[in-house]
Image (tube, rainbow, N blue to C red; front, side, top):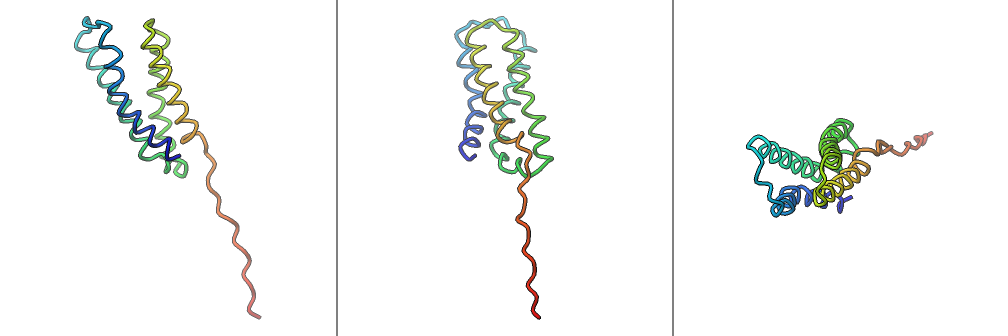
Length: 130
């Protein structure tokens, strides 16, 4: 679990770096200001989500509210990845979206989906003093 939390934190930082590196040579100079700001806001949101999951991943298995928040937050990169994979035709974008989708699903299945609570051992009976 610690390795997944570290990978999630690393992914939070890579979400900000990798799209810029992948799309730098495609010549996307025709973006208007609104589209560029929306893309930047989406990348910052996805980065924040992965950093949040990396920091609070252990508590999600024990706390139902944190698990619900994690579910709500992880739907953003999952839906975004599926949307990009369905609408784009560039190979680099499709590969990056696939990796992001796979990693998001892996985090969801390991931190959010296991809803089993840790049960305490049954207490033993008291010994009578008489």
